Image (cartoon, rainbow, N blue to C red; front, side):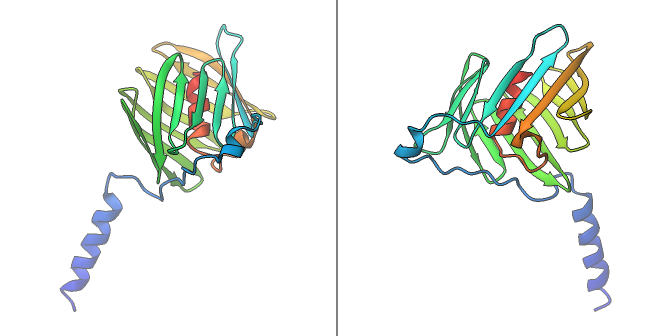
Amino acid sequence: MIRSLPAALAATLLAACATGPRGGPVAMDATPPSALEAGTPFRPEGEIFLAPARTAGTTTAYGRWRVVGPNASLSVNAQGQWGGTLKEEPLLLTARDGRITGAGVELDAWREGSSIRVRGLWRKERLDLTFSPDGIRGTPGAGCSLDLQPGEGLRWNGFLGCPGPDLLVMELRGTAGSLPDVPLPQWLLAFLAGL
């Protein structure tokens, strides 16, 4: 009994120091729309407006089965995969059990308290972002860094450095403002489409 206590303590300490994801994977609905649902008009549940410095900005909207904006046209196919274009490049993704995968994409999404952490490869670039009601921080890929903090109302303010810092303004409308309780991968795809 005495020997098992130090072994159990050591195992607990090792688990606490592990570098892997903490918390649970973010649930993602992979249920494809029925033929009737696929034929209904698009009604957005949330919208993300992003305006890097010296631009008018763009709004990307999402619903349960679609992400639509000037830089995004994605929908869920009959196999439950997200397909279409994002920033004029074709994209086909599988999103299940906290994982988003596809050609050049290997992302893990999990909850850490009141935050969502997304980490891995996004179009063959390292991505490591934390989304919480207190801020959005990290690296969205291509050597960039991001730091956004909530302001008044729907507005968020901060910087996007690629490599020099530029101001970035964001507005989260509808369910998009319910961080960390936002639908994935829709929210993430709409966010990345605006950067």
